[in-house]
Image (cartoon, rainbow, N blue to C red):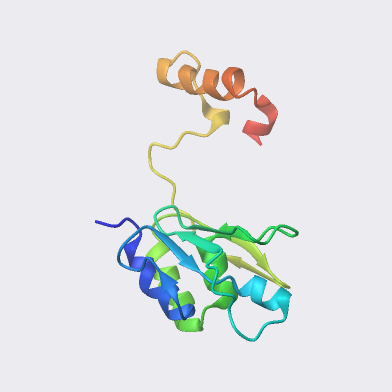
Amino acid sequence: MIRGQEFHSIVDNIFEDVKGVDVSEQLQINCPKCQERDGSSQPDGKYNLEVNTAKRVFRCWKCDEPKFSGSLGKLVYLYGSNIDKELYKAYSQSYFNEYYQNDDEVIEIEIKLPDEMILFSNININNSDHFEAYNYMVVDRKLDKEVLIK
């Protein structure tokens, strides 16, 4: 089974020529940003924009400044129709929340974290599982405690 396959029809509906639909988690698309930047009326046929539907992220390997990447939701909201947006919202609503800015509009989708999620500020260092997570974040990754609490 292909993870994230429910998003394939949305991506296929938005973009004309998508490689990997119903075959892979990794989809390849002609980048619309590259097409806009180059002032071309037709796609370049290089399929530089890749979408991972399992992780729900995208990235154009040609766009450098500014880099064109982010969540699949951002891509849907930038280029999809209202139907695509509603369908995406329905599929992803039970997973997580996405925030991003689309010109002057901030789009917000509700988040649902797992019940076992523990805030870093509520960590119990006497609990061995909590202590292991603490060590990983603070000692191994060298992240500042104040940043993690924030």
